[in-house]
Amino acid sequence: MPARTKARKRALDVLFEADLRAADPLEILADHTARADTPVPEYAVRLVEGVAAHRAEIDRIIEQFAVGWTLQRMPTVDRNILRLAIYELLWVTEVPDAVVLAEAVKLAQDLSTAESAPFVNGVLAAVRANQATVTASPPPGEPPD
Image 1 (cartoon, helix red, strand yellow):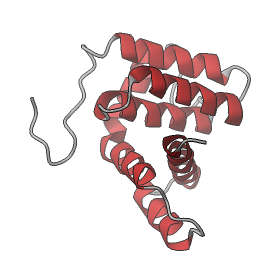
Image 2 (cartoon, rainbow, N blue to C red; image 1 turned 135 degrees about the vertical axis):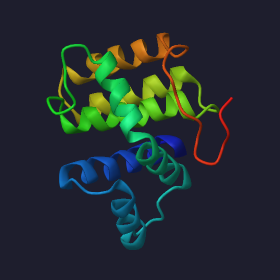
Image 3 (cartoon, rainbow, N blue to C red; image 1 turned 120 degrees about the vertical axis):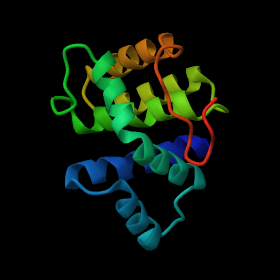
């Protein structure tokens, strides 16, 4: 399994746990880092930190494009797959959009319901198609364009 694929899965584990516990993802990340038998990949840390930093904005985007669904109504894993993938689509420029979508759909296929993969694909495809109109704030520490 490629390194970034593993990192996405680790990041999803952290985000999922934080969501279930209604906890700060950064605290869960710190806990995972402290007790991990294997180090938490740097890319997983980047993803969790990015989602945490932009969560309100990401959730607004999900609600905009997940027609007929509220965040609370979505399966927890789907909600966090979407958070992770939207962060990558909008703030991680070195990963091709097609890779982000494929990885998110694969996570949904492996970890969620039969309906989840098409749902995740549809939401992410809509976000991708509307990237020019979706406002993404700059990463922390970077000035706006």
